[in-house]
Image (cartoon, rainbow, N blue to C red; front, top):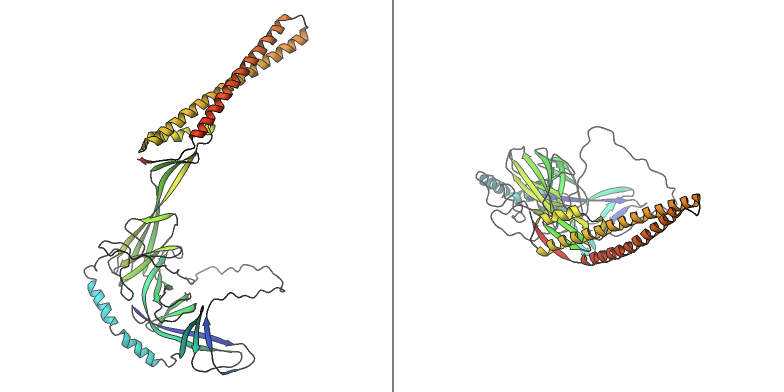
Length: 464
């Protein structure tokens, strides 16, 4: 890293000669592509592999690969716009937090010093190139899905040895940033190089060593980087920056009622708020990109809006002055619903429907529907109770009749009292069965009418 906005990128290719003959002055072409190819051992025995567990204790942080951000629609430049990085490539972001507007007092001098330090970048890069005797001699070109690095000078690689061939040495656009992801590290962001491939070459994936001011700074992993594309390269933990994350959840009142498919849906909004308290412990300005998980069913609301979005994360920009503490509040809202099934009047949730009547509904048709369905359910419930009462009478008469027959059988045929009891019970059973048929027909008619009535599509807003 030579300066805030310019990087010297050097790329090497490792070539292994695994053949039994030397390569003497061969023409070499290196290919960057992703063909589908594999080797599958079909004859080797399959053995279970034990899991290897690392020793307990302190371990260094593992490599982190940041996701690629997709292009977003350009944001309108307006005072008070939030979260957008309005600077173009090669320009630093504004340094007054995560809002728009000019730099705060006291920061303009810092910006002037930065640009004055970068004024001699080209001269410094030229000096580095002059001192480097291993400048590559490579011709680059594309062929279909392949990208070729054609080495212009003959190459010699003895058998069973390797050669390190320089293929890239370019000054490219880039800057030093911090990237925070609470899933990967809960307290500190990562020191990151945001690299834009302005070399005109396709950069192959692989490890990257970061050198800053002549000293080793860390290592990163790079995906395949096409010309003009941009990547974040996290290479170390930024312990000069400390982050505390707080999550809050809140369910908003029901705002809409819908009827569809014999189901009443009560729609409400669930709001989640994640607060990032970011403290800059260093005596220099910092630009922190905060990665917040994407919820496909939710949308980001409020002032803080993402500057870019990857497959899994929204990225928000926070600009910190030396020793400054800032809060970034990311608010997401999604629409949810609870259902009331009204297809079976016997199991109707009358409590929930009565609650809906108590709400202030805009649509009187929906309110009338809820009241009518409760009325029809009440009528059906009365028919059910009448049917249960008649069946109880039939059961009692049948029991009395059975007892009279047993008594008549034991006392003999001369006992007229039990004969009359049997006849009376039979009359009651016949009468009750006739009533039960009528009640059953009324119940079936009311239930059929209920089912037809619930086959509607209605929608109404609710004001809390």
